Length: 319
Image 1 (spheres, rainbow, N blue to C red):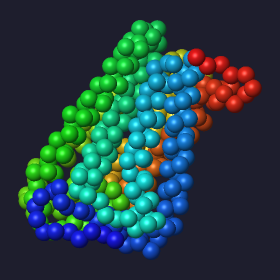
Image 2: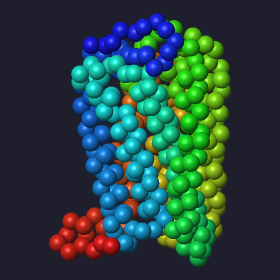
Image 3: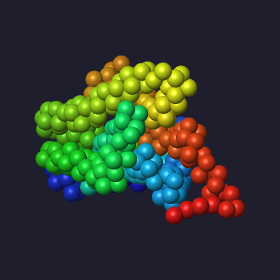
């Protein structure tokens, strides 16, 4: 049963109602089946990938250490959203307190920005490996990798922490229904009675100046990689160099394309794209890329395939 919502401005006493996918309420049970399956695969696949990289000495290289960071971010992102989503679909547990909603909002944005930084670090890793192969081990040392990981977390925290103050400063006066399956910044802000221009501007600034700049730097990295690759006289060497980037490019496209689609539709395209389509894509976004990432790297990365086979063979090597 959904708690009644009292008409006052104290955020601590407010409860919201997450309605899932508006317009598809009758199909929630059917939609939950693939989402639950993908969530389980995402958690199991990424957890195994982290375990494999941490326990196999041959995978203690910058590329795989960054991949373990990406896998951890995927587990956290899907876990921050999917359980509540499934509770809505299965048990109609739609109520959520204001504090819990804001916490979920923070973790979703925090993990998203951190994952964007990790993808940039992985692009930098490929750039150094292809453009400066002889200096690869001296540039990307264990200390540098550790600092990059810590910097990604600190940057994400500094960028996303203001979201909490931006929603707490607003005055709320009665509206409590969020047409979504999870809480995000603008979904909460649009329920306020105050002017939310500051929220809109800051949200756009975060999208364009953090993840947007990450995309620009990733494009620059791969442009320089391509320029270097096409200078290689051997066609076989070119293919080998490009194949090392293939899995990363697939992951980048899966991460950014639906994310920016959802972001801009939520702000500018609400009348063009049906709302239930937007929410459905947003729901799939938090489980599909985390599910596919370990599969893509497992299929496209020979070293991971070899270590998986050795792991399940009678004799395996580990640290």
